[in-house]
Length: 366
Ligand SMILES: Cc1ncc(COP(=O)(O)O)c(C=O)c1O
Image (cartoon, rainbow, N blue to C red; front, side, top):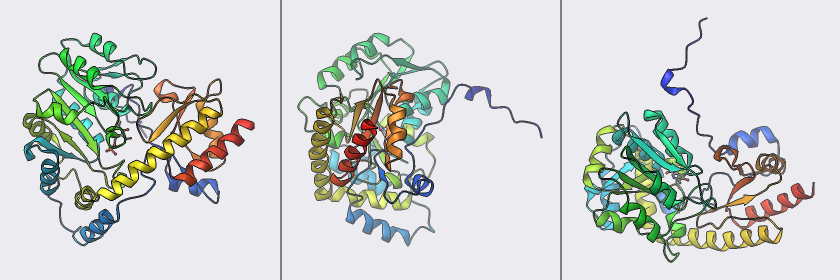
């Protein structure tokens, strides 16, 4: 049988390594209890209102969804104070990252981001035209000054995740303004706010929505996967100028979001109490886990998200990851982000976090 050659334009591209799936690990480990703290999901689960809406929507899954997700767009637009033509819906916000790369990058245009920024930026740019440029980080956060200095006339998309995954670090409103001032005409600043609900009360946290409303060349990306607890249904959205939304709508799959996801997201938006409980649990547990790690002499990067980035060196993050797996705790080693001496742990509920800390004690003692 003759081998099928890998297409030349895919040379050098790596796959996105998602956090280990619970099913896969539960099956193979034989452990009685497994704690998944690897994908920054909501430890409270979905809102009961979203669940009820999803159950109702299941009765209609013989039908195609409304392709543009009109009801959800309109609900988001009303809530955000923008027009429906300024909201695009994606199959998770990763879909929107890919759609932006596909819509806006010509053959020679560059996408710019930090070397330890969320991996999908560079991967989507690479899949489009291989012109992803990565700028070194500063104190493990995105370095706005270095990003601005790296801009060239070919820079078309600049990705700033805020807070960033996997570091949890964030950039201020003043930094975002400074970056915008140096963006060339025709370029777009993508403010990825996947974790904004956990961060927005921090003084100085940028208001991406206000920038879009003021006509700045900004695309804000948000998601129902994190604070809204709907990661499995894949719904994200972009807020941007109508021209950007129109470009995304031209390129996207006609039915890129599904019928159940649209219905659940619409209902989740209405459940303020669940959102509040999620944010408060995260704040309390993030503070507790960070303090517990610091008390063990481990360095923790400052985080505004629902996870912590912890230094394990001189021990490799991958070693600690493997040892924690043996105790049924799944975290994320950060070698693929050029941070081999770090791991990322999601903030779970109190039980899960306590189990993580206990397992870590055994791993470190061992
Ligand atoms: C910074 C960042 N952006 C986007 C995403 C993707 O989220 P979604 O589930 O909406 O595709 C993630 C998920 O981990 C993320 O960390």
